[in-house]
Amino acid sequence: MNVWLAIALILAVVTFYLLAIEIFSVAFKLTGLSTKKIKFQVASLFTSTGFTTNESELIVGDDRRRRIATICMYTGHIFSVAFMGLIINVFFTLVNMKEFDFTIQTYTEWYFIILYITSGLFLIMLILKIPPVNKHFQKFLEAVAINSSKKTRNTNYISVIDLQGKHAIAEVILNHIPPFAVDTPLSKMELTKNYSINVLSIKRGKRIVDVTKDTMFRKGDILIVFGLINDIKQAFINSVSGDVIKEVERYNEINLVNNYGTNALVEVFVDEVPQELENVKIQDAHLKDRYNITVGIIKRNDSYVSANKDTVILKGDLLTLFGPYKNIKLLFKNDDKEKDKEE
Image (tube, rainbow, N blue to C red; front, side, top):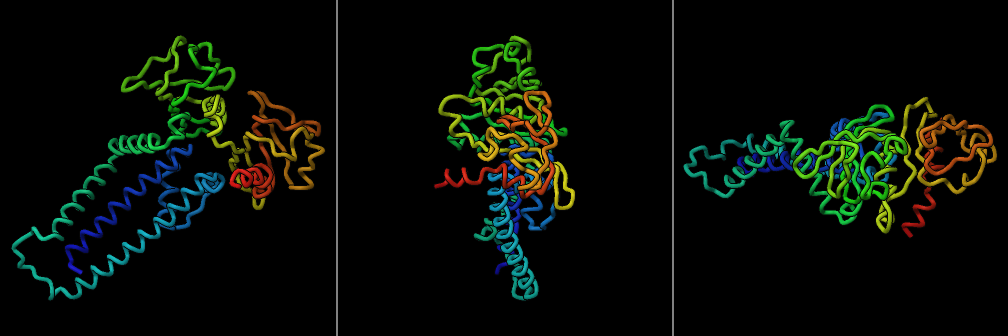
């Protein structure tokens, strides 16, 4: 292989490698994964290092993220094989340097043109890695992803900027005005009372709108909000009315808090009560006997409910559970209903 062509191909692979990491980072971000957690997880998946943390449960516990992670691993493996193959080719070319003519007078050969193009693209990718530039590039990729999806054009999209324990600072793209906010000023939406959400800022087009008691949401607004992540989802996604709600995936959200050997402390936001728990008291559900699961805390409508033997788990509850993680996922992931949807 011509050494200049090999160098051009290496630059091309590295450029697409860097671009792919940006694309997968945006894909994870659009599923609601915290921006701070994304880069590390994508790098781990893409390089096939197999580095495992408790945060990896945020990916494997969500169907969409798991599909993205699978594609990311396959893509990373293909790139790694291609890159190693090119390195080996360059090595053998350098070993046979006597065959390479350094007296070439023209640099308009086709392989030099490829080298110029790949060098330019590589330089552009390096510029896009500069933090301020990268921030705008990520926004551009997000806009392309959202606009290319018919589903997301009609539903609100939530992107977590930062997590503070159970709370989150999130960006909400209003592709659809929730029923409680239609022609309603902020003071009468009662977001703080009903959802414990504070609206920090509103971006409308290219300008920032002053957040006052008389502010009303408009389609296309980008909100920065603070509150419990489950409340934010409940307010801006699950409250969407009409045919749009049919397009929103409804699953119980399961978040790992900590591992304790074979057991785990887990938070579950109940979007759909499992069939075996519907209208059933905790005592009669025999969760301890059947799954070795203990219900610790139940948060319901901004207040805490005693998890005693007569308590019934309801839709919208935020549960804190202790027990084998796989058993908790088995109980609350509603696998049977997901299979029915696929059929």
